Amino acid sequence: MIPVNYYLALAAILFTMGAMGVLIRRNALVIFMSVELMLNAANLTFVTFARMYSTLNTTSVFNGQIFVFFVMTLAAAEVAVGLALIVAIFRSKQSIDVDQLNSLKG
Amino acid sequence: MSGDLILFFILALTAILTGAGMLLSRNAVYSALYLVMNFGTVAVFYLLLGSPFIALSQVTVYGGAIMVLFLFVIMLLGVEHIPAEFEWKNLLPAVLLGLALIGQVLYLVIQKISTTGLQVATSTAEAAPSPLATKLFTVYLLPFEITSILLLVAMIGAIVLTKQEKKGARG
Image (tube, rainbow over all chains, first blue to last red; front, side, top):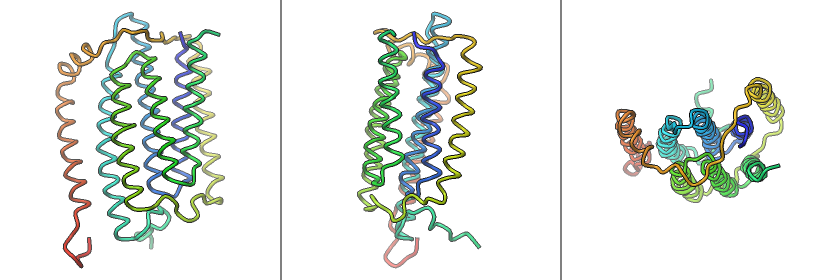
């Protein structure tokens, strides 16, 4: 038996790492990877709570796991569109440094 | 300390170190490989939490499909390195914000939730995927079908965004 808050703390640490990645990196691809890391931490929380309710009720509760499915689908769709966007941006600006994408800045 | 906890701490250490590796590698390919390792570790956590099907989806979808797509785009564009990757003047506020976030969350997790003493049973070999599928295709049938529209839209979007216009056209 592992306490729930160990899993929650781990998920929080992973989520924070993802958030830090979005803040400090300038490579758009690494920023995308950090977003994936954050989604993954959220998934870990979902599965942990699903397991917790299964342990409490001594029956299997699957709602959390099904949410993880939907999050995974969303992540796959997001990566496909996001990487297509990055390729399109690279074609027009020859760079994926997010600090150089300032065309809208006055 | 029980075997469960030892396993948990080893895996947690691996997950955190690979996450930090992803965060700090200057080369985007190394970042991607660290992230694959991280996803594998999280998949083992899913196994421990009694959801083998999610664990295998994690390995296939995240560790396989998504990361291959990432590596493919990194190598297609040739952007392993970009100049001035870590901008030091932006680093301090980011680190402070990150520390604030982690401090706040860990405070909540440790102080508020530990009082209830909830436990998670480490899974043995049960939890076949069929009850999960039953629930997915009965209660959650409508969201499941809507997911297909989402994937279709994403597919069309990706094709339209990367389509080469004819020579000379801006796009």
